Length: 199
Length: 158
View 1 (tube, helix red, strand yellow):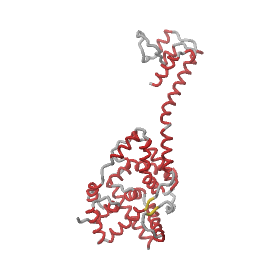
View 2: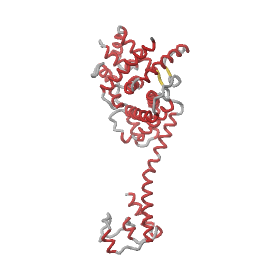
View 3: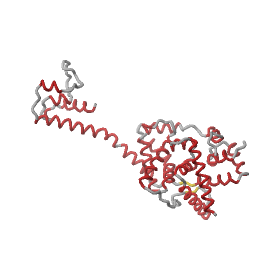
View 4: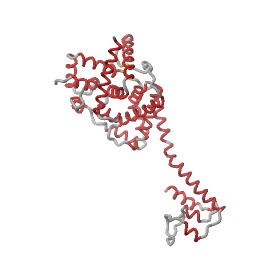
């Protein structure tokens, strides 16, 4: 399990563009009260924010509330946004915090079947194949929901949001090494749990 | 390019979403072809990455409406304390009607220094401080001129 900057960072640094200038312009306009810019930012990040909230809370209704709260906090708090991280990373951090607060208020985490909320991009027109994929997806999801908080977050941010370890570190307010370790521990635990359920 | 297991597992999510160069992607695939452990992990990553939870219908509208609704009161928030302060100040001035006017000497002795024109400075038209309003002997709001009221509000706002 590497905790150093390795091929990963080097490879990504060549292909991942700098934070979008267009997004910076949208953020600047939204900060100045431009409703259309705020609307575009919401549209652009809505699915990621909702999905992250859903992953963290396993509760579609509460995830909607958290999504709303995260966007309101982020857009009304734009004067405090210094642009050190991308708007998206900042928004994810706000979402994580909002979900933690909502989760604490709600109490014990509910374990619910997310099959109705999930969509699997399998590209297969075969309904029976899709059903198998959905079952597998739901099984993975159940195990993902059982991971310890930090590992679940790191896996969700890395795989669902496509974030780099440095972005995860900002979103979770931890070191890059901790983000990487938590991701790999989460994946390892997930593989073990899935292996056990298949036996 | 030859990659080890740790690097392959680190890079796999980025390879699957097409965020690496073709050379890196090829190296990861070549490694996975000969390493069952990495291949299994990549398959798991693929399963998780393929799942999406589309935002429910109407959530976008709900979020945007909430942002606008919560943005609006901010302009009022500044006005409310100001209005309360103005009301209290004016009530104080109004209540002055029921108290005997303080003697000039006593007023001078207890009055804290106030920002405004010095005693020997010419007083501009409409100049009014809370202190001077208090001491003006105005029995009620009705006794203040419009200019004085405006000046008083300007002072409270500043």
